[in-house]
Length: 160
Ligand code: SF4
Ligand code: SF4
Ligand code: SF4
Image (cartoon, rainbow, N blue to C red; front, side, top):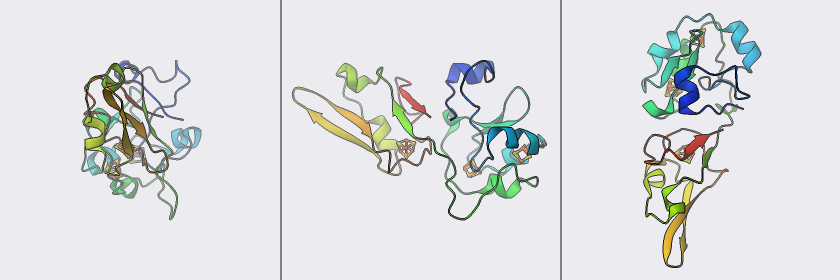
């Protein structure tokens, strides 16, 4: 399952960790993806959100610090070798947002940035007595779109 930290991404440290690179939506399983992807970069230009970038091996990865995936499917449409293959009914990926302990609300600082950013309204805030409300991700509702990633002032969101 893909889960790369920003530090890992920036230093291109994909193979040194257990985490697989975060490929664009509808990517084949990593070994098949690596075989099929010709590194043509067509998916980068096709993405209207401009969230697809290249890793140090010149294969595409998603960078949620640049924005969210709208699941428009343009990247998969542009992928002639079908390393990205959109199939009817198949989810784009199994990513879910997770909130780490450095979340400001968990330090009793009022913050709802992630919830405000979530188009699926999948982050619920639970009121606490005399304390900041605590966010919780509804896994069933989370699409893994990444919209909550960049707005978090504490960088407390990960997608895995
Ligand atoms: S589905 Fe659309 S928004 Fe998402 S990565 Fe592909 S082109 Fe970009
Ligand atoms: S369009 Fe397909 S083959 Fe080309 S870089 Fe993107 S994933 Fe790889
Ligand atoms: S990844 Fe998208 S759907 Fe999931 S909690 Fe974040 S903003 Fe909401």
